[in-house]
Length: 302
Image (cartoon, rainbow, N blue to C red; front, side, top):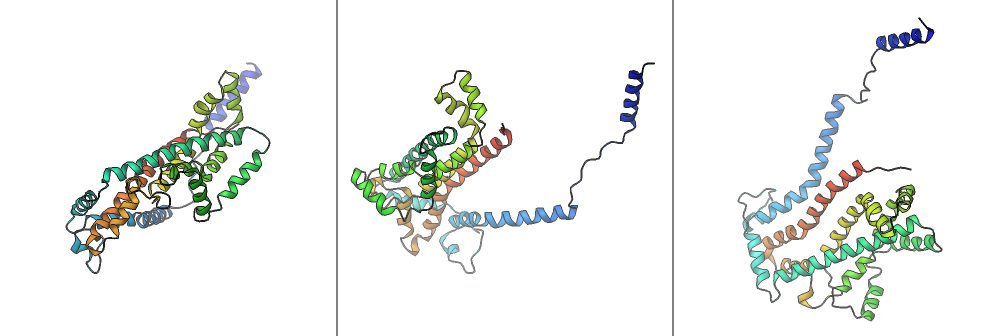
């Protein structure tokens, strides 16, 4: 028997008699797991409590809303608050559907424009070196330090000079230039492998194909997060500073007028909260599932 065959037999015998490697056990005990789950349940309950309370308040009749001590859950749930809200809105000379159209139009156009401009600008800043690129990004970073209250007066002066006061563009165009979108997309695109883009160009892809077919699908978590921020900001924007005509006002502004109607409209005010927060919550829920799925399935490294 040759030495090579003997060596192979020895390796097989060692592998056969070698004890199986045990799985690594977690350091914490079963009591630690139980304590962790209890803690997470408590935190989840605290987070979901405001939503549960708001929904039940909207379903309570007027006498239960003034009950003391207040109760969390409605004893006799009813939809009268929502029906009264629509009746009150129907008495306005501007219909509820008009307020809704204004809000949906501004939210959709502003979000889409913000996403496209921020994504294209971030792609150039993240993957191309050109004179002044770093300086421009520093300006964007500094712009994030200023809130809307600080820039409100210069924004109004500029929009007034452009003749956009009391138009949709007074809300839509500033949404395009929000610095948070450019910053978020640029930081995320920097983690995208440059070799992937170079390979696509070697295969004959032009700049638009690289951007739309390669870059954007791989940074889906970033732009889904950007959509959440943009929808939340635009949907809840009262726009009372720039829009004066009643037929162009936002839904949130009209509903806030209902809330200011006094004690008799307390039930309608509770229903207003649900109408205002339902769209941002649904947007977050559906976008979050997409973010988690994408981050779990698309990880690329050089």
